Image (tube, rainbow, N blue to C red):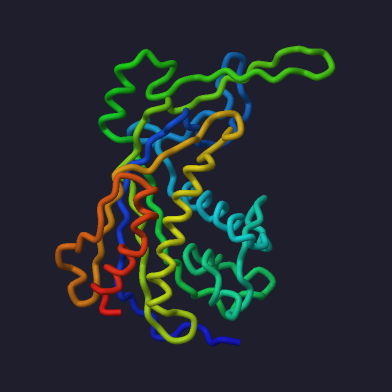
Length: 277
């Protein structure tokens, strides 16, 4: 059994900035209850101060983690509310797990299985992504059903009576751009389960998750056409070591995820060089 982390310190932080385009209509929100006649089923989530739609960091991070767990074939063995995720239950398993090392493990002890590992660090931080000012202005100038959004009416057919049951659903229209968004990836050093060399290597897990998300969907009703998104104008910078509070180091700028993946080795090598690894 490997020991718990000791002497944990930050070696550097990588900042992945991007813009997120809704290629098809985007719906992120909870299920509405008590819908009145003529109301909207599943209204979107909005910023309470501006009334603008936004992408919660929790939704984005959860989707990335879920896609990567499936991609790597990891067992969903930990219950959170009504959802099961993969969580490593011991240090040996955690040391080799790309998902738990990158996205973290729950703080809850549950049945006591994770008590010794609850202080392990999360590498990636995912911020909320707000609707861009340019898109907000463009959407306000359009004849939409609601501010910034469209109402898409979906119809289910009763298999017995053949009766049509319309469901009005709120979506952010295709073409809307959210951003700038930001992933913050922390590289640690310390005894036991933390290795800065492997932390740098695992940054590629985030890149892979971004690609998987573009092949899947974000938010709800993805199987019915909603939620296709695209990362654009990606910019990677680094704050490192004793120069942490100086001007961040520009590592790479790429137009899309395809270029990000194709230049992954160059990006990781540049980060290692600047960190002295």
